[in-house]
Length: 105
Image 1 (tube, rainbow, N blue to C red):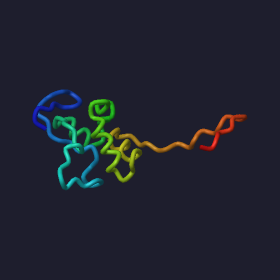
Image 2 (image 1 turned 60 degrees about the vertical axis):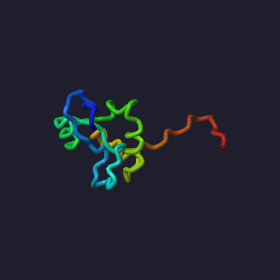
Image 3 (image 1 turned 90 degrees about the vertical axis):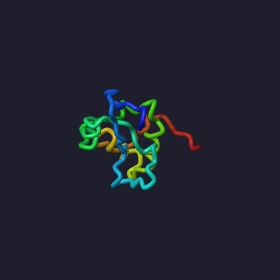
């Protein structure tokens, strides 16, 4: 990650932090789109789930975020859980307002 600074504090040095844990989505080829640059402090905070990286990933790190969603077994919800350190769950679809009919596509 030469030439990169920490996503959070813009400090050097940095090391590559996997957005999705290698234990959940193995990365045998070392895909550079699976990692982002973090200083040691923020890498440790992210690993302990005390750091929400989502605000730092958009819009510049969109490819890495998209790949995280693709490789995580839990898809978007699983990736959000990991990247934000929060528990996300889908919500039931809101009921249709009465008197409004949906057209079949």
